[in-house]
Length: 129
Image 1 (cartoon, helix red, strand yellow):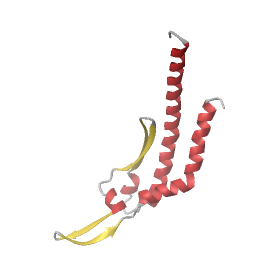
Image 2: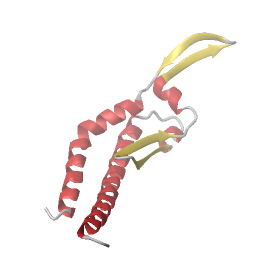
Image 3: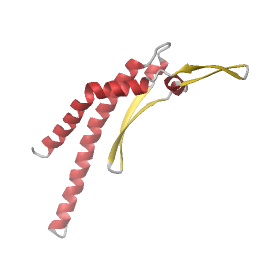
Image 4: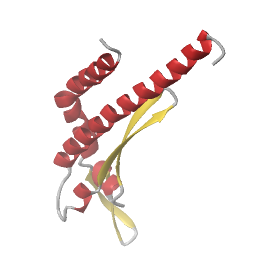
């Protein structure tokens, strides 16, 4: 440390790292709640599609991104719909179940405002406010 400016920059970096950690923690919980709502909207035959929903939160530049994913190979076809092919010809189409979109909408309606308030409270509390 050579000057007060160096100390201030070091403090800012530490504060930004602390804020990022807190925001990522709350964002992770938000993702888990969103997955819960998506699972409720997911149709069940064997339960495999429902079990494979996952969420993660990561920092990309200045943004925090919540990722919802399902690694079942047929998840996209169930969500968005698909063609029905018989003997090389398209004979119909199935409508998508849109469980991802419906689950996210249910999360927004039910939890989002409270979760954003929780994030603001955590940051405010950490700042001594």
